[in-house]
Length: 422
Image 1 (tube, helix red, strand yellow):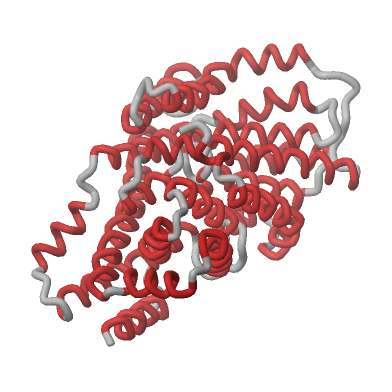
Image 2 (cartoon, helix red, strand yellow; image 1 turned 90 degrees about the horizontal axis):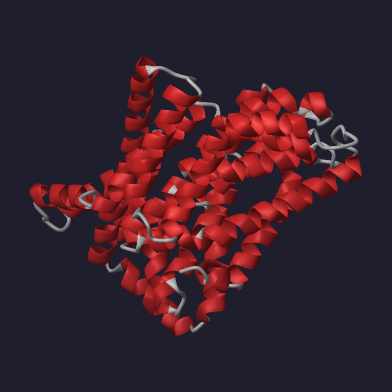
């Protein structure tokens, strides 16, 4: 009975336009308070206790570092530097965009932030180099999804906090899958460019421009290498790396490139604070939902069903991927995490799947969700940046779905890709 009430309340809150994280949190609080007589003080302690973690200090710092890097036009400088030498290859400008996005992904940890940062430069430069505007918009939307796979990933921090998994291991687990997804996209872009004749091809690399732009962009290109290197080598914890990233991005923007001043810096900090509050709301709601599911016995009932079905790890992965992809057509990645993670992770552990590997699979599905209409956030961002209709961007993205599904299949089939570096 309580499960039916919970589902009814959730659908009601969603119908009146509440954000999924808020709706889930409200449903959990209402049922825990009225159905299980849990005092409101205890509920508050559970909610805020979910945020009482040293590791979560990394969230506002990584958000701030990403916003500082975006405002500092670091992505544009990396893009221009790479394009000066890759323009001699058919599709080289598009490949430059993808590689620049991989670099920028290691600075912010957000899919939407990557798309916002790379979008204006791509729309400004690619059409003039012989690429259709819709192709440029689709490429940025797809490449931006790497922001939640390549560390530092906010998605991995949220999952680690909710499921009590080591965030450093999650970060390291995302390195090889993220690079593999980037490599698949590069291959696809080169193939599509040659097939359709996209891009202006120069006779030789412009090494003079590379030296000029590379000298200017070198400090920016060093930042992701320092972040990933510091994490993998164990020199700094994720929280320490996040503080270093903020300091490094601030120095680049304020002193090296002088793309913003102190007054703008305060505005960036305020914007980052608001974004952080949304992430913390997701973690609080997910924790309360986990408590509610335990009280209702839902997780235990579902685990018992899977034991009876005896479908094994492969069967569960097939079912989990289908469910997550279907949820991606209705919800964006953060909402999927709140709704599905508290249920799926205990089941994955029960059937013998490494939770770190499953976290990478989960995030890979959330990557696809950012491209899936009608709620794909990257589609909306690029439709606004490119001033094309949403349908035009969505149509241009379609050929890339095959590439993303191949990447998802590889991540599912080869656990060592996620676990080799841990």
